[in-house]
Length: 372
Ligand SMILES: Cc1cc2nc3c(=O)[nH]c(=O)nc-3n(C[C@H](O)[C@H](O)[C@H](O)COP(=O)(O)OP(=O)(O)OC[C@H]3O[C@@H](n4cnc5c(N)ncnc54)[C@H](O)[C@@H]3O)c2cc1C
Image (cartoon, rainbow, N blue to C red):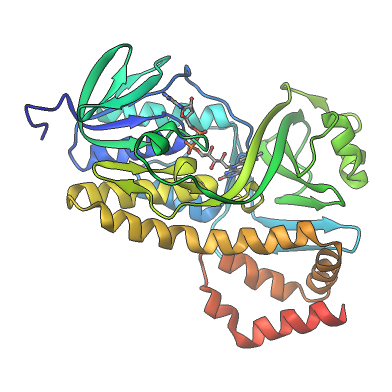
């Protein structure tokens, strides 16, 4: 499909999960695809490492099923806080916890098998003459995809407005050798933030701490969640602590000319939603269809739709983070009425629309919050 004036149909800047997903989906539409990343695979990043059932569905739409023994499984979400504990199972399917480097390797192997060309340890330094500048030469491309993360330079080069940031928090994660604490992803709520625990193997968990304030140390962070601290008392850590910024941000436009943004380069939702990866996989499929139709406006519309529910959920959970009053009332209400939490979880994983919560559900939630 490559026309003579181009070296490739699609060039992807950034080979993280979003970039590789975009490359896979574009390749499946018959485009020739090159990906460049300044890092060397498998690429690690601080992450909660959970893929909810809807994220796994999106991966399957890309043609990839996560396999291997080194994954953990979870059946739903559990909230644990001083004001109450509540758990809910996914209406369908289960989630998977997988080390970030293993997920990256699986995406990379799949991309390679489809014939995606990859350039590792390669920084893209600018845009020029319908192409990208790589190692002092220009690679000409029909389409350019910016998958270069939250500080995207492609976004600036393409003149796309800086994202409007709603909330910025710091996340740190570490792995521990210990049997998963339960068959849920556990989210511990505290005064300074949240700790969330994902099973990533038969005897391994990933613990991510997220807060507005920087933690003095991982141990000091864990100490803010006494119930979790007790579980981890004798558990051996298997990795060094790794940190990253998580934010909720939205862009007015995620395309300009032949350039489109994907993943965190195109906006993000707070990590607490556990939806960042799923969103990127869905965006990748939508983008590939827009490229095939030669119409990036389709991608803009699909991108907005993909982001809307996770953005709403992120705002609701950040409200619980910001206001002890809301958090206390919500946890009490959910513990008294687990069915409401179950319905919220089905909405969160896309099994039910917000409308499905119904006016009755919304009113019940509001009422329960007031009287809790
Ligand atoms: C603490 C924390 C916990 C999280 N937990 C979860 C979770 O449980 N589940 C979930 O789904 N999501 C989670 N997320 C969100 C998830 O990590 C992100 O959605 C995901 O990393 C976005 O992937 P990306 O490919 O867009 O960006 P990145 O993973 O940041 O990849 C961008 C890539 O671009 C490369 N790059 C940048 N500039 C250039 C350049 N000029 N040239 C070449 N390469 C370049 C970088 O090297 C990098 O590899 C979490 C995030 C945080 C911070």
